[in-house]
Length: 368
Ligand SMILES: [Zn+2]
Ligand SMILES: [Zn+2]
Image (spheres, rainbow, N blue to C red):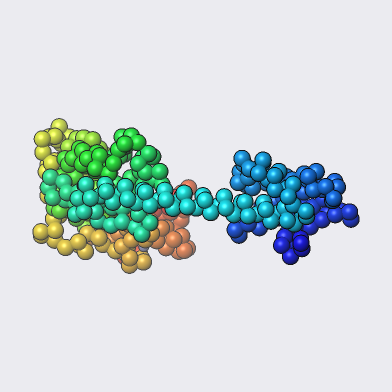
């Protein structure tokens, strides 16, 4: 038998050809082996060692291999025996895996059937990831994205949801999709007040950020006037409590608003919605989509003429009341730095507004 033809990866490493080493390829996988053959005439004295992967595959077959070795007359013959044994092992494993995944598949279809097909939005070709829809009390659609474990239902699936808090699931080896769905409904219900409160803001004010609010987003940047916005961070567990507020805009416009907010804090009423409370505290009505257009508030930067620069919004405004032109911090900083008339002191640069030439200053942007 021809060693070189059958096992080109295994070569003798000494003149007597009593030691062989190299790789054996089985089902497109290389396994490292080492063979010592002290007496060529007596194959039974052969010492065979191999890498960990092959050891795993041959585990439990030592007696069989010994038996085969007795019947073989050449090393090549013996290696062919090893090879065919491993091939059968690998084939068997594949069948078990296929049977396993078709069982998961049948189980899954049964669970979806039970849950109701109308709740299934999508499922991938491998029957591993599925999206379930759920309507809340106000008829809003929520999606539960489930990735099943190959050992489903013994191992808990992974879930992705769009809710402000964590979604921890309870799971036992006898649990099913219906149980998961019920837990999602409970979680979803617990955020209804938060979603109601946020949705009122989204509907009745101009939200500058996030661009497209999702249920998990707990902050909003709301337009107050053309040059001022307020950013609020809402506690989703207590959505009607006074949120953290931060103003963005030119100082002379922000100062009176901040003063109004601080002096009216006692008027905050947790029985009311965020919108109503904010308007009371600011002493002004917030611009509404019913009476204005968003372009009035998403005023572009006076230097690059864009509104969004990466994630930066134009929140540096000229403090001259007649100008009030907003700029991106980065744009204004670069602009002033390039002019010889500007002067820098520590991390602040002082110069003239590119629009009205009145004095303007800007801090060096923090590199992200
Ligand atoms: Zn800009
Ligand atoms: Zn100006």
